[in-house]
Image (cartoon, rainbow over all chains, first blue to last red; front, side, top):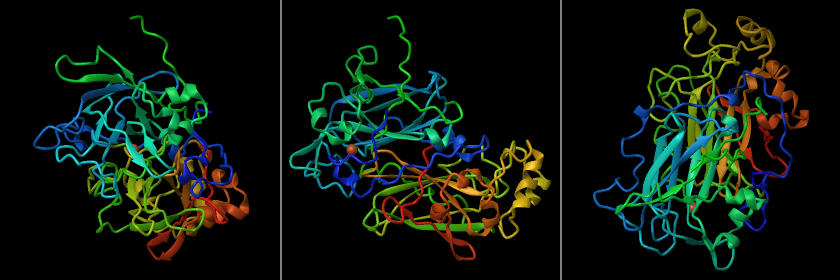
Length: 221
Length: 226
Ligand SMILES: [Fe+2]
């Protein structure tokens, strides 16, 4: 099982929010709306949406990075033109969100939200800064490893995926109940990006590669 | 640098977390049609936890056919064209756990119908009022495609993301005036009869429907493993 279960008591918020009944497993007819996906066009996005460092007058503080990879289906085919949305904390580990009370500085030059459409090779690419780790109140001395939130559509509503990308070698992995909710270590590793010198731009930004594989649609499975 | 075979196991899901509000919701997300649209309906409801408490940090997404049962195939879910219908909506819940969409009542899906073959005859089949829906109508609508294989009741696909949900819950919203068609709907047929009402919205008025989503507990909404 790739995905985490709904109920993972170490992550406290699952206790009252996890469905308690088994999901109903219908056989979807070939005309089901869930076997199709909304599509989005370039004209709906801003030209700077994929550069999270370019949304304000000045440059954000922190370590500039490039995050790129391909969105693939279960057969390894590129998923073209699909919408990828990202959001993240700033370099100090603070979100530009009113609900974030972490006493770390906001960065007036960083909002931390971006989006793009994958190209013909299924590739997405964002320029951003490396987010900081941040504390949360799940348990005493709880810290989230640095991560970027990802949202991907795919070609069927059944493939809709929201997940988090992590950075290699983070010492917080073992202490993070959200990452540890994934039962299998091999599957947890799939959320960890890979530092890549070929993606790294000299004198400018470190490069990370991370591919996303969407689940099979029920019709293909 | 020999390319290796791709690792095809799916990427695992993680929670949307509490801090998506500055990134995912957008101004037009809840309004699939403009307020002046003659067929506009409102769908609203609350997302509730196992203790019955409203969830103020959930994100609800819907995806649906248009009034004639055609699944939209054009872009426009982020930046609306008032003359088009993208079929996609997104709304974060408010402090009371409430979400709201302004949209069209979908028609039953018409096999092989796409939104590019719109014509006068298609428009006449639009079921915006919903009042005339019956099993016979739905079967008849399928006649232009591959027989009745796609026959079923009109519905809206619903996804809910939230802090504390490590993966989204997936469900469907059906409409109370389509009760006759519910009997021939293949997905409803897979749901135990006593739990089917959790998938049927309640008419609050002529054009307003309530669809509360209970993530857990006595009144837990039926979620689909799709
Ligand atoms: Fe986060």
